[in-house]
Length: 379
Ligand SMILES: *Cc1c(COP(=O)(O)O)cnc(C)c1O
Image 1 (spheres, rainbow, N blue to C red):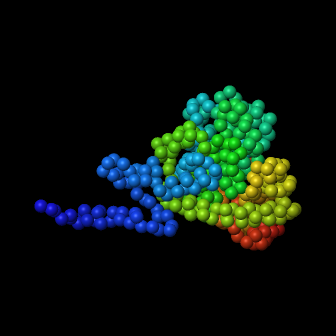
Image 2 (image 1 turned 60 degrees about the vertical axis):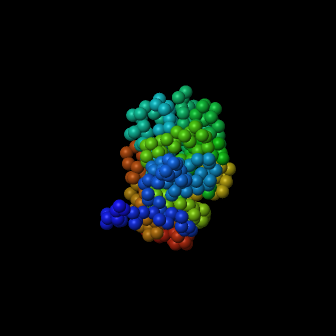
């Protein structure tokens, strides 16, 4: 005799996924942690379990791989998880060369975590190729490039460094967070790995944390994929959905932001209270020519400035800005300003009179007027 299902069972069965063959224009958020297995053991579309793969993640990965001209992209739950995956793909005893000016948390990650796993590292001035060559050790397995560097906007010649890495049987990874594939394609310049904090320009609205690793080489891809799905630092479907939405306007935003950045940099460079503006679009930047060669399509929207004054004068100026919110991070539609040295804390090599500026999409006249006001009110 057929038994009618009871309340609890109806509650479950009546709410199961019924509309998966509907055709929405915008991608739905696939929260499901698991996928139905067919009677013959197979899976439709290869989705099995969300740590292993998920439609929202697959969309982000395919998109970033295409935009970076890479074969494979792997999304992570943060930029730092993506960086960690690259370090974890090395073997104990390997040596890593890091730029002397680098996103501070990466140096800390090496010092506090990976050193215990017997990975060594050396900080090198990568804007100087001879210095870099001398720093290479027999066990150097990875040269990590950040160009422009954070926060001093030093550039590194990616094509030359990738070649040097390969001559020494090492690989070259580039953190491309600041320029994005809109302005720089490290794989096309010979790099083996591109890393992004998708928290920044890809997301673009300061509302999601994420990271990505892009590679061409199948062996490296296999290693990163294993770390991604077995270590499990994967992004949530909603986070991927936000990043996919951000990607749709990435180029519009960063082009507008870098246009604003250039105008602001020009203004600040001519201000008597500003000692120096660090921005590779300016002729005063020592590597302006390398910037033009390597970042063929643009210069980005991050600027650092050195104030004529001490640490307190510098912090005071940032507090007088109305349209530049004091906050860490970058790449969102809103302008941000940050005194890096006090955030980095112990071990920071950042000058005390440096302010890092993430230029947003506001009207440039308002942004310039804001700085004019803040600089004139100082002391
Ligand atoms: C923010 C950032 C990271 C770290 O990314 P999270 O998403 O914060 O983990 C790495 N590199 C650069 C250049 C960054 O700006």
